[in-house]
Amino acid sequence: MEKNIIIGSDHAGFELKEYLSDLLKNKGYLVEDIGCYSTDSCDYPLFAKKLCEKVLENKTLGILICGSGIGMSMAANRIKGIRAALCLNEYMARMSRRHNNANVLCLGSRIIGQDLAQSITIAFLDQEFEGGRHKRRIDLIEGL
Image (cartoon, rainbow, N blue to C red):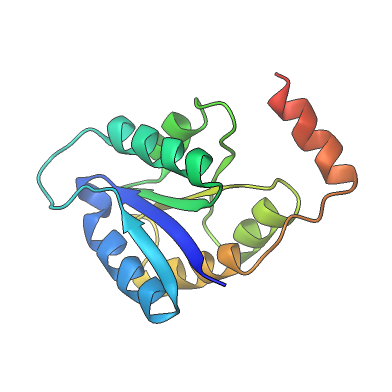
């Protein structure tokens, strides 16, 4: 079974995006990089929108990275069907998938280092949505 992941960043998250892309490829993921492709200043909402549209179209997971992770998470959560989670540790990553069915992981490259970003990413990708009582709550979010 192929594991697909879509990844994107702004200029502040570019280096962490490159690091995580290589890591995921080495773990057998098919990684689609939607940009940005340098550290030149750019507008994060454009990349958040592009990634989220692809996540919904391909029914897969995504990772967005900016300096704090806040801007990307705010932009991503404006798109219906996206449940973006800004995660600062592995517990948040696991629970965002298990209980909130998050489909986009947001990371802050200026907040966490590469090792923690790696641990958070793997924790996020290794989880499944538990459903049950959590599905009812996700349905309520979707209806807002």
